[in-house]
Length: 293
Image (cartoon, rainbow, N blue to C red):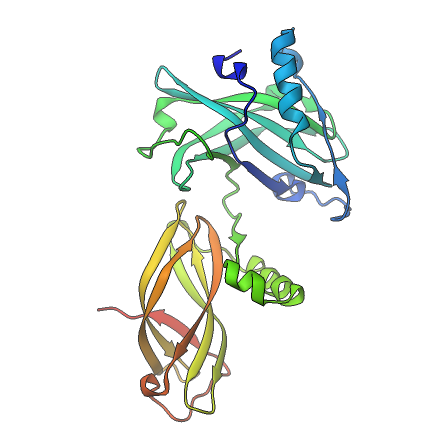
């Protein structure tokens, strides 16, 4: 056991994905049913001291419920020894049957969502992990798996590297203004798209309206394929209509707009009439590009 288990305080964040995403097998579930997994200590740990068992029970008791058919990594603490990160976390399952891991790639992020380590773990030796359980485990990231980014003491995050997994996020102002139906429609559309390539940021046109006063209002999806967050302050954009001609262009100042790692966020832009280059615009199809120079 590691020394950081002596403190019954959880320092890492939680990551939750569906069992379908990890195991590729669909299971009939109810998104309204909450599951409170039970504590499970893997037999390979042998006899656990009373002190450690108390700490695990204390931390386990405060974990939030999961929805049916979810897998979660809930960070406990990190200790760096001999150049390696030893990451303690609960491996949580609300799947209604035992699960069996093989090779799993994990990512370790700091509180600024910078990648601090990446490693593929062979977990086949764990065998069958019982249904609906929270299992504490220690994941070791050796020096060669660690990046130059500094790992924060708190609010770090251990996550599954699913490659194609890409998240959708709304700005708080959009969360407040949009109806539940509109938010669901946006999320379904964004999550149904092919994710951007690794280390790529792209812009996808979503909706465009040529107003009576001549302004052109567009909503676009900003899609971040990097493993770290980006902030946009200035964004020069051009709009091309169905004829593939530039019909509007402008430079926008943004409020330090943050697009988190592997995340898509919608944003709206208004091109004033003075920056619209054509009176007749065919918006049956259109695209947005970032101006160069």
